[in-house]
Length: 135
Image 1 (cartoon, rainbow, N blue to C red):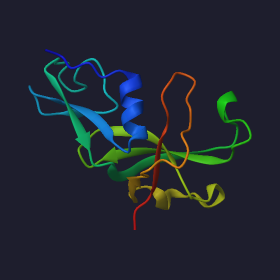
Image 2 (image 1 turned 90 degrees about the horizontal axis):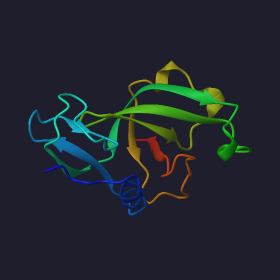
Image 3 (image 1 turned 90 degrees about the vertical axis):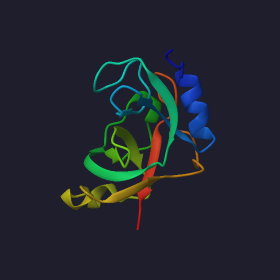
């Protein structure tokens, strides 16, 4: 039986300082944010797990022209984080100087901020993940 984990429940967990994912009982792969099927084998035998919220930056971009929901909040950095458990998630990088962003960011260790200082709303629902460099 496939667990139901809605965007609303996923977002509520983030607000409670918890990062959730789904672990496939067939292949052991972890998927985050949660999807309907395993990202590796397309299996539906999934269970909800809590992730540590730590990983490393695999790529990034600096945003100077923001979508409507983020007008007046530029510039900022969006990173792709490879979590220690395996999945990649997109997140905002907090407390980083956008103008100083360079290729040196790639490979840097990061951790999810808990508690979230303010929820960054996304038009499609939910909130954006927020990470900081981990010293």
